[in-house]
Length: 159
Image 1: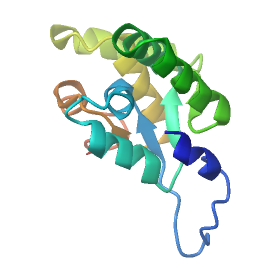
Image 2: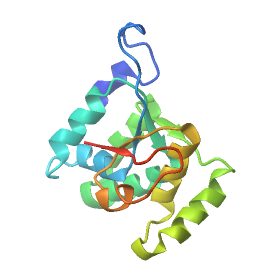
Image 3: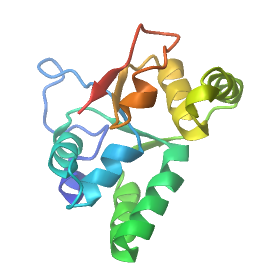
Image 4: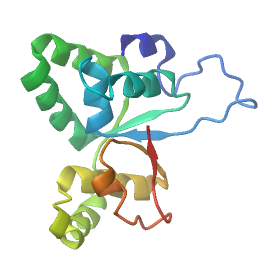
């Protein structure tokens, strides 16, 4: 993922604003982990998506712990250190949970309790709703394909 460092999100990467509109992409654990794990069956497509996406890559704060744990426990300290380096380099715009999101997160967890949505996925949905974003990089079609966001009919799921 270090290749994206030179093209840091939110920065002018030489694209003319008139020619290329920045499209925000919210990134969750699955594609991020797959981009680091060369043995993952989704590795190539996730790495390409994250390295070539022309707009900001938003990383919900609660996703960081989940990804760091997966990378450390499955790939080791070297891979975890690279992930932390990517965060430090600004490759992802880390977005904290807003105080106003917590009740929506609780509502989503309760509404989708039969499928065990969970706090991390619910926080991603609350973030997308708050920012009026519809594009999510996820491999989790089970959750993100079922949940009906408040601001659009359905999310656009990538890759």
